[in-house]
Length: 145
Image (cartoon, rainbow, N blue to C red; front, side):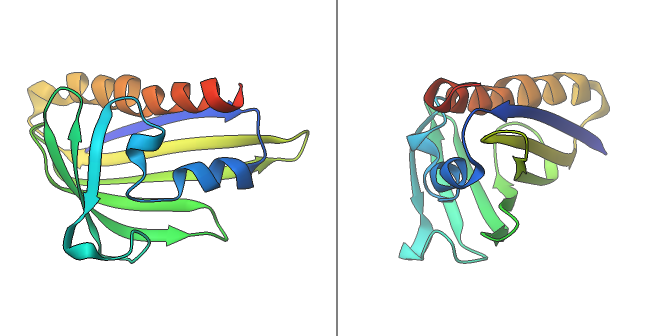
């Protein structure tokens, strides 16, 4: 099983950052690689089990299911249902933790998945460096960090 772990510190209180990233349908509002997103069946975007269907700016389509969401613990866990990436059993969590020394937020984004062994390094690098770090970099441009 492949594992990805990326973390960063954003120069904003965790409640402000959480307000930006909490919406399971809101990726186009903060992640530069996402062109559009919709929740299937018109369900609320914070309902456990809802499915988001989104398109990347390169035209690829991905469907993901919300597995967990906590405003108290500030995390979101989701699984990929369909993707052109070649991953299976993909589960990821985006988690925010307050930094008590100043108004900052520690963010970590993790994923575990199965894939063809010869693609593991490539996928880990693309997901960690492109998807996760790309999202963090965009948030840092908004909030600082």
